[in-house]
Image 1 (cartoon, rainbow, N blue to C red):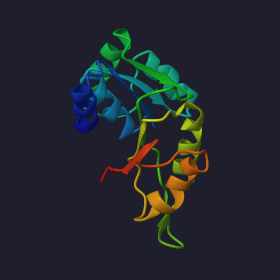
Image 2: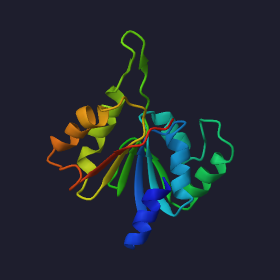
Image 3: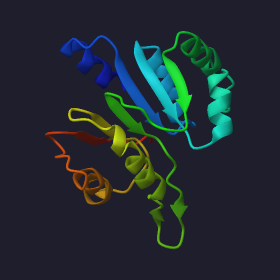
Length: 166
């Protein structure tokens, strides 16, 4: 996560804006980390109650110290929770991928939906990181076409990476 910060710092960008889709056990601590490193963060979740609570500084997960970080970030206007994405420099997908016992695979529907939800907000030069746990080759075979079908050339217009949380 520090890599993006240092890339933007080297490029001379003062404040990087990060949109993190999914505000659970991975997304919320990731959001907290970025706010502590001089980034502006939009934390997106589909649960309206979670979004409302986060905007009031009420945390729904157990993580030592995170309540204070998110409350301070909200007060300092470097963190806001939202039901919808916003334009950003980088997008990080941290949604669940439930395990499917019958065929030993992961349900990628949440990841696909999250990727489609950011399409209206993407601009050339953005970075998209899939942090959700997905099977090898899923990035190339399933995720990449979502962006290419919208006219983005991955590696030229848009940068796409997979950085699993485990």
